[in-house]
Every structure is written in C-alpha cells, then in structure tokens.
Image (tube, rainbow, N blue to C red):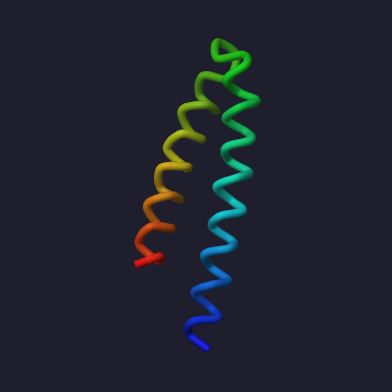
Length: 57
C-alpha cells in the first residue's frame, strides 16, 4: 500500500513538473512581461524536483 501511494505521488509530481516546465517555456518567450511569473515558476520547479528526488530514494 505504501509503495502504491509513493508511486502515485511520484507520478503526480512528475506531471506537475512537466506542467511547470511548459509554463516556463511560455514565459521565456516574453521574459520582460512575465519576469515575476518566470521567477516564481523557476523556484516552484526547483522545489518539485527536490521533492521528487527525495521521494525517489
């Protein structure tokens, strides 16, 4: 049961990382307009990746 929950969490994190990466790619096209959003998304993806790595261990 614990393994299933961890796998579900990993998949959810992976999806959120991909979604955030898509947002960053959109924001990067207009960095002057989306400066704050780009910075916020960059911090978010760092946090998500760190959490993913922690769960993966």
